[in-house]
Image (cartoon, rainbow, N blue to C red; front, top):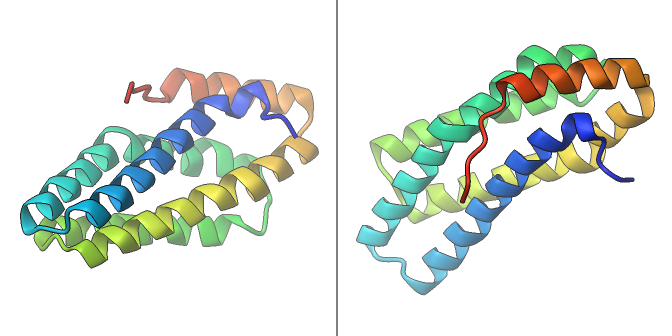
Length: 145
């Protein structure tokens, strides 16, 4: 199913998150040195602060309350796990933590895109989707990679 325009800003943020995962994993394979691990941890932390906090906030305040999906509790739990991983990366960056963060972020994004967003598009009436879209669009942080 094509992505509804109301959800496209969040899908763009998902795309950026997936790019972070791919670039992190690729870079670790090519250079697992402590200096590179430190650099990649800083990038993950920066992306979290720039975009993911905004993304999680929009989902939890705007999108999730509009849906009665059984997926919501698990997605919120994943948000907290991702936040905890960022805290761990701040304290003691490691390749293992970066890989764990990338794997969880990728799985989380796929669940939202393939399950939650599809469910929302099927269940919510056009007027509700349009209202959500306006709220999301007004608050989403847009970054250029």
